[in-house]
Length: 422
Image (cartoon, rainbow, N blue to C red):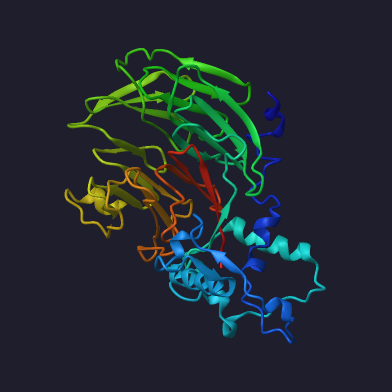
C-alpha cells in the first residue's frame, strides 16, 4: 500500500501547518479597492455589456428588464451583494481601519509563514474569535480527485495527520491529504456490496471502523498493515444490523447502538463484547464523557464536548446545555435554544476548541449554521445568502486545529473551507 509510506498515523509528512500558498495569500485578496488612477485611457472607457441571464448571474437580477448590464454596474451590484451578505462593509475593507502593511521589500515567505501559523492555530482564546462574521475561504473540494457518485455519509479529519476521510453509499472509503489547494488522493478501498452508513477513525488514527446501511457485520481497515478485516459476529450480541457507533476518546472502547434501546460496549483492541445495557425507549444517539468513564444516550441527536451538551428536536430547535446542570436536574433548562433551522437537525459537531458549533439538517438544501459558542449567536455570513452551494448536508467535521471545515453532501462532494483568523 503506497500511502503507508507517508506515515499517515504519525503525521510526520502531513503536518497541519503545511504550505498553502493560496490560503497564505488570503490577506492579499482582502485588500480594499484601489484608489482613483492618475490618468485613464480612453479605450478603457468603452462600456462592456454583460449578459445577466447567465446562470451564474441570474440571481443578481432585480427585475426581468435587467437582462443586460454594463460591466461597471455589474461590479457595483456585486459589491452591494457582498456587503449585504457580510452585514455591511467588513472592517478589513474600511480605509480608516486599514492596518499599516509591510514594505514590499520584506521577505514574502516570512509573511506567508506568519499568516499560515495564525490560520493553522485558528484560535487560542474566545476573545480572539469575534461574533457575527466568520472569515472563511472556499477551497477545492477535499475529495476532488475522487468524488463519489452517491451520498457521502461520512467526512472526518484524521486525529493527528492532515488527512480527511470520506465514505458513503458508493461502497468506498477514501483518504485525501488536505492542503486546500490540490488535496491529493492517498488511497481508496472498495467494500463489495457494502454501502457505508458510517466510518470513523480510531482514537490513535491507525484504524477505520465502517458500518453498513443494513448489515450485522462491520469492517475494520488497518492502515498500518493495509488489511481489511470483516467482523462477522460478536459473541453474546444479537442484532439484525449495526449502523451507529461511537469510539471512546481514550481509544479503549467501541460502543454499538442496537435496536430496542440496547447499547453494546466492545473492547476496541479485540472487538469482543464487554457488556450490554438497555434504556427505556429508543437509543438514537450516544456519547462518551471526555475521560471515557461515562456513556450518555438519548432519543434525539446528542453531542458532548467539554462542559457542553447539545440536543435537537424534530422541529429543528437545537438546545445547548451545561454538563453540570444536565447531571443535577431531571428537567434541565437550556442555556440557549438555537432556532435557525426549520427542519430536524441531523448533524451536530463542535470544533476542537468548543468555540464553534456546526448544526445541519439533511432535509433541506443549504441548511447549515455555524454558532459562535461564547455569545451563542449564529455567524451571519455562512452559508452565503441565496447561493445554493451546499445542497443536502450529510456529515460535517473540523480539522484537529480548526483550520479546515468540511461538509459531505448528497452529491458525493466533500466541500472544504478554510477558517481564517482575523
